[in-house]
Length: 250
Image (cartoon, rainbow, N blue to C red; front, side, top):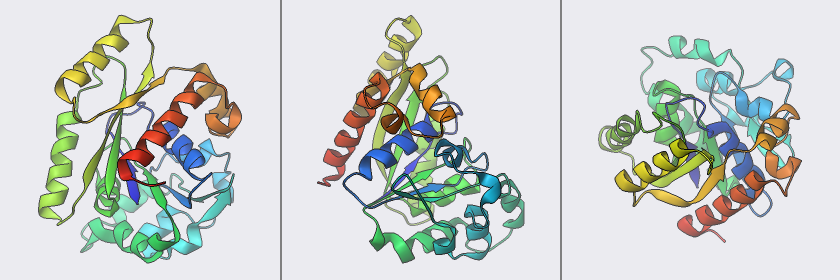
């Protein structure tokens, strides 16, 4: 089961969602996290020193051998990323089949894992396309702020194009509201707008805005490990269970 967490809008909680879902699912399942964002925020989220990594997703995209890039942290297998990846987009220009690089690599190791979760960059460039092509499902975090719905139509169109033009069967796992603040009108309005326009796609779980998430990131640990009793931790636990029900994994 390969899941891309995608939204071209930055700051919507993609990385936090990937890290916490990975940490929770790893308690019962074999999990691999793939950081394919040049910013490497998922890598940092687990307290991994990027300067120490000889093998990263950059090498995978250029030369293959994803096995060489997998490291173990907090009971989870992770493929780290560094800023070097930003240069790979130029180096891959014109390469035939470049949209299928990650798909080909993950196919070789997919049987070793129950879940492979990919954290994508805040864009619809070649790395996000690689992620979508390789995935069974896409999960879209939607920040509970004004302009949150901008770009969602474009992302949905990209998913359709990936299926039609690249012969995929990518399914929308759902949209999850993140950074929700029940005390603000804007958060409530965004939730209602998503319910109105994407009612069939909206997941029941809502992730609250919680300062503990920032604290956990600075500590190099997902919030569900850093502080299990935090409101955000409880919501991510609910989200993991909801996803397990949807994909029918026990």
